[in-house]
Length: 326
Image 1 (cartoon, rainbow, N blue to C red):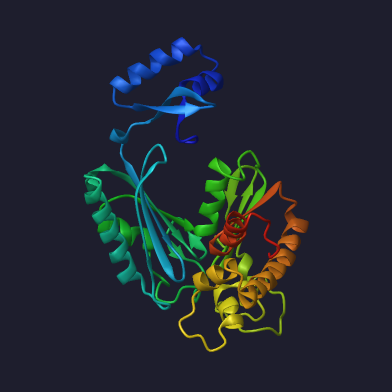
Image 2 (cartoon, rainbow, N blue to C red):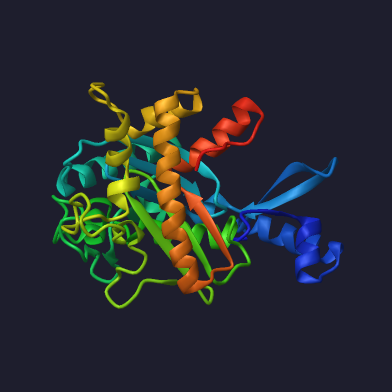
């Protein structure tokens, strides 16, 4: 159930090899014990009993920080999101302020679903920087100024009085796609996060690969032009200086102050030529870098996520035709 998020009794029978009658009896016993919950659903035009883990087992919270926004979600152990909030962040936000806001958002969402802190089993914290998952500290200074040296998992755990687990956001994206998404069943695969920053999560032999210092997958800091623009990491010509949010915004700003990456995405979907060109150029650079990674790792599959990945799906849904950009 933890991996599938919910199955019908017939699907459970097929997976376990037990007869439908046996599965039905077991489900009834576990529902009575408060372990499982059932609801009516429709599969292939037929009514079926959907089986999930009961909320009585507890809730989990997820906090995702990026360079310019924070998203917080509250879910039950069957992967059903019961509350969600997100908010923009200042460009140079600092750890103390944002961890306080994350803790307050979680408290508010618990109240909105009539739950308490005691029901939180754990909190997952995704950061847009390489992390030491043991210490909860960013391993490469300068990537997130105002967060260097802060044990973020411990700090948020103290605020919530709950266990907190932290990792790089691309690593967690890769793990999520491998367990329940586009990389499912692909034990050697790559997840690329294309947002304000650029990152990659590696799944090797069915496990997240973090490297010796937790810096594996720093895709955005692959140097493509050693004489290129200065990157926030201190190097020059990194992929992020060509594909990252600031690079895309700068290429289409043309005097428009306050422009955000989301604005560029919306304009591209709406047919704005400059925005389409900026994202298409970014896509070409990204494709070259991804091809280099493929030559090294030969992955089973690549999945792409993040704000820029929305362009293709939104364009196709609105226009009824394939996106010809990145």
